[in-house]
Image 1 (cartoon, rainbow, N blue to C red):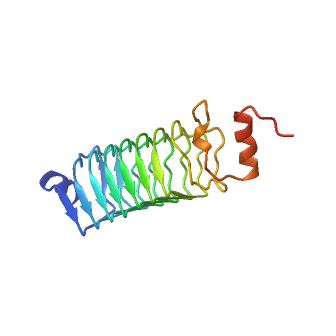
Image 2 (image 1 turned 180 degrees about the horizontal axis):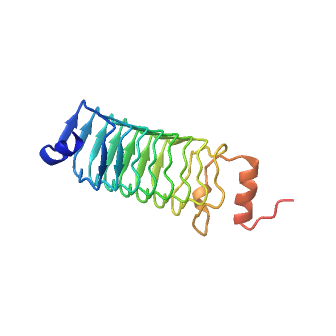
Length: 196
């Protein structure tokens, strides 16, 4: 069904896609509204410049798919595998990332507004030059992630993993972020401060 829509339509409204399995499918510039993807396997698919409004991906595998310059609002990625995905230059508004794996994914130059990143892995993901506002982070794993030139202002990282993250030489990214005492010691070391 998804392949037929990709071939014949520019939009998908009020549809449930369940157990769809596609590889390298071109879904670029599609408009998805009130769509549910459930237990779908969409590997190396192209969602470039697509729009997602009130869309949910649940128990899906989206690994190595590309979403550059996509727009998301009121959407969810839950209990899904999104390893190595490309979300560069995308816009996320009121979107939930929950209990999912985004290892090696690229979020460079994206915008997050009112989003929640909950209990998900972003190990070695790229968040360079991201603009974020009112972003909630709950027990996320950012081990070795790249936050170069991304302000973490207002983000509470205290219950998340931030070991080995990459920031700029000035470390301005940490200004205004909340963290636990152990994280603060690690950041102090990055700043050349010895804590006794």
